[in-house]
Length: 268
Image (tube, rainbow, N blue to C red):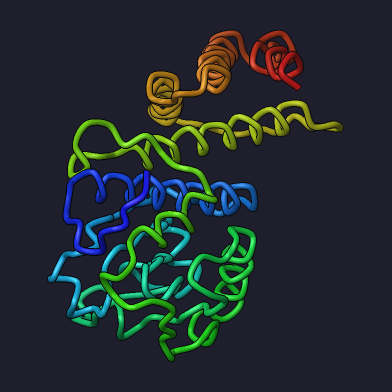
């Protein structure tokens, strides 16, 4: 579907833009997750005619967010950190220290490289940020497109990265987060299988309080119930059972209760 009318303010246009922006964000998230970057969510906003965006000199946008722990490793403090894609200026990394009162634009380090660079290039930019978050990219904001202009052209550019099914109403849409949840689960399962089946593993003595073991079992149960990935669900269930049985039967049972390992071998 194309939108030749640049003044089109329909919910269909907004929904279509949010779908392709969400697809682009998911593609970038997939590349980052493959490099073990702890992406937690993405977002997409597709109201190309929103006048409130004029203060930002922008219109549509998307973002990729990380865990607070990852943000602290970058800058050593709290606050808000992430990657923002602006439909006018492309990608930037931002860091807003907690309680600073600063805006996103105050801290933005702009990637350059055009409006819709390939996900692998965005991943490379984040690698530069990890080396020096205060100097990566440029403080000078580029402009590749006028705000509110040619939404049909932007839509076609973003369609190259795929789309996410947005559901019934664009303002209630969470399709991109569902896509990222599936990606995170797939990556988590792959890493778990690799860890469980790694060669030359040693038996490690780890002392746990009963409460700590119970908490760990609860976390695994949460993963089992929450993940959309059937393989990860089964790994979590079996690993929780292995730990419970070893706690009951003692250290001598460490090689007896290895259901998770057996399942991981099947998956590998």
